[in-house]
Length: 238
Length: 238
DNA sequence: TTGTCGTCGACTGCCTACAGCATACAGTTT
DNA sequence: AAACTGTATGCTGTAGGCAGTCGACGACAA
Image (cartoon, rainbow over all chains, first blue to last red):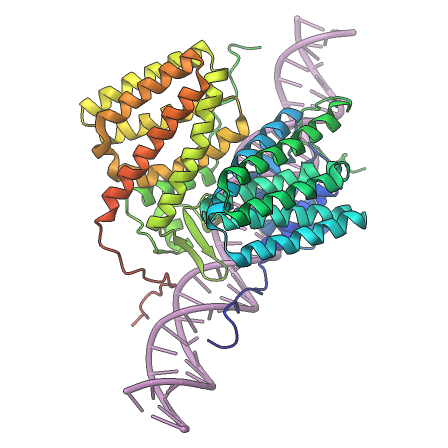
């Protein structure tokens, strides 16, 4: 061993991974709108790469639910419906409730300490009114709980779901504010005490709060005319 | 409308999808062994396509846990450990228990009828000692239960998990035999009666039976020397 | 012998090129 | 006028090709 145990992390990420993150960012930030037709060559030019990494990125993003792939027509930014958000949050509730239960049984002291740190950082972010940091810390905390469950398959699946939740979550994060972090604190206490049922119960309530908060917020929204995603064509040149 | 409502299905699947299924088949059938280095050009030649569809297939298979992608080194058939199988089956139990609960609340009469049909087919397959058909029907039945839950996100996730379970499951399917289908029958009855708790309970027991059956069967196996997957090299030519 | 360095070759990652298909528009027919 | 058909064009799906990279192997030194 040369220096440390985690030496092989800073891999010069492949171009494909960079493209994946870039496109996710474009979607979350709203520069790419739901339903929009993603033309490979345009994205390639925009990002300064060739079509190949873009194609591969789009396929992976399709697997994670960010875009829909229509064979022969191309990729379209996924249009999240209200119903789907509800179902997604329900699944998250299920996965994370179980994670909390297992975490209470398996968590290490270091893991609990990490949770406490994240909780403090989250509260600070909320007080500073830094929504972005708050959402990020929230995700990190949930991820850490799932990690402490000791079930890697569960962790992987939950992470996948959480990434999508985050997309929906950002707009409504401000509303929940500090109460969310009080619930986190109670959750951590239950995990530290090894009280599986209480941890599960708190997590269930917590995720259900997020869910109802989200649904309320969006209930008043105008129902957008669900434009059927069609392949766009560049206007004929001259 | 020309003739029927479902006219646009029989798309000539893209080459990539065909390749995905082919490779899955090669893995499940054991022609590609766990840990084996998958060289793109070899697979391409074997399947009679170019490297591109193979690359894309490998990436998708990586997302589903069939192969591991090491950047710069290539793809390796995933090596399923006992612990991972346990965790995977635990996750399946979680997802399907919830599905059964929801299915009991939401199932349509047509859906229940479909379940009954599948159950009959499964029993027939077991009696005919047709393991392959039995496993396939088992998967189909579970998929149908999940479908009846009405939660599409849950269904998609469960399907993903189920595909991997099937890989592990085939070797031990014979052992469970008919008892498994008795449990299915009880499950369907509970769903038809709309008894959510009972349906959930039966499914929990059922998946736990499968899990312990699997673990028992593999407990006696010799622990294979976990050869670290390394990039294979063709012997230097002459 | 054991550890380190240099070389070589195969394989991956990415780019470019081409064929086929899907859509939109224009012309034609009823 | 409305609907259908032909044609043009841009996009996807696939192929082929090139440069960079990683691991294996051998030589050399401790």
